[in-house]
Image (cartoon, rainbow, N blue to C red; front, side):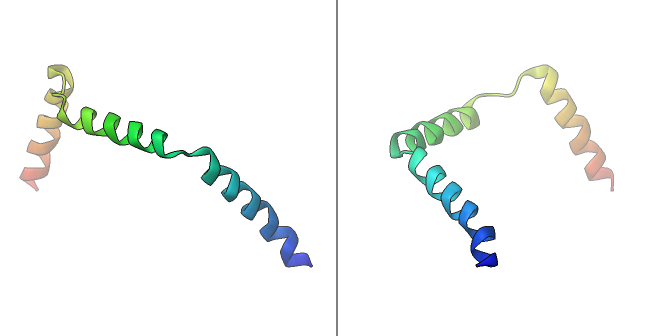
Length: 59
């Protein structure tokens, strides 16, 4: 019985989470992440990536 008290909230929350995430939401999340990957990085941020890559290559 003691173990059931620890496991029960986990089971309830995992079921609620699974029901709230729909297929349509999954499709929109996938599309949004795909769009984010195809967009170019702004120049002021790209500058810091270039600096970091140069530092990594020096090691």
